[in-house]
Structures are given as C-alpha cells and as structure tokens.
Length: 138
Image (tube, rainbow, N blue to C red; front, side):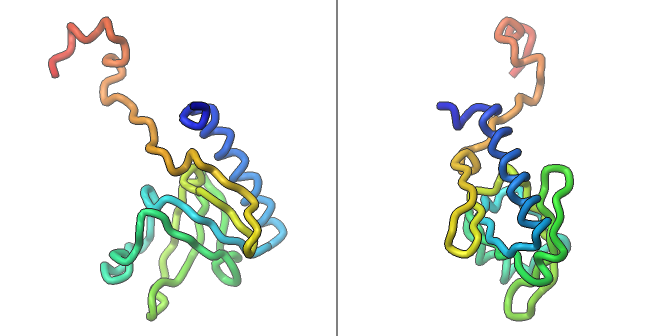
C-alpha cells in the first residue's frame, strides 16, 4: 500500500509541517493528535502523570503553549503544563508522529501513516543484500 512507503510518509510530514507553520505564523490555536511513541518531555513527567497516557495523545496548543511553539529539526516543540499541579515540561513531538491537526472541531490534516509501525532499519547495512547472508553470523 502507498501509505506504507517512505515517499508517502515524507509527503505527509512535509504537509504537516506546512500546516503547522501556517498556524504558528498566524497564531491560531489548534490541537494535535499524535502517537506517544517518540515524544520527549524535558524534564520528564512524574510517573503519576505519564502513566495515565495512552498510545495516542492529544495536545491543545493555545495561549502560552502556542506562543512557545516552534518547529525545529522535524519536531514540533512547545512548553506545556500537566496534571493538577501544572507540571511544566518542554514537549518535543516528531512531526511524522502527528496523526491529526484540528482547529476546534474542524480537521485540517489527517495522516493515517502515522499510526503504522515505522520501518526498521537493519542494524548492519551489509545485511540488506541477501547475497551477504553467507558472510553474517546470526
């Protein structure tokens, strides 16, 4: 299927970055639904907060969170508060992990490829060629 190809993933990542850039440029609040895998929190969230997360998480970027947002190295980065104590953390979301971008209830972007497992790169590039299997001890 085309959604499993790297070319399609690259296209969807590019589209997501362009939409995010526009929303950030015009300072428009929005939501992102994304795969939790690969998201970084700095500082790390306390266990009682992070343990409540599921495989998919939604972030609302508005007010200070929106103002602190920027895109760098294929990641959307923003500051956010979590839990009752509003624990502050800088969140780094790989753009390729974004499943959906919405403005209010209106979907602006959907990336079904973000829900698929990422292709695994072989540990040894030499192993990519089937004729080299005779030289590799597994």
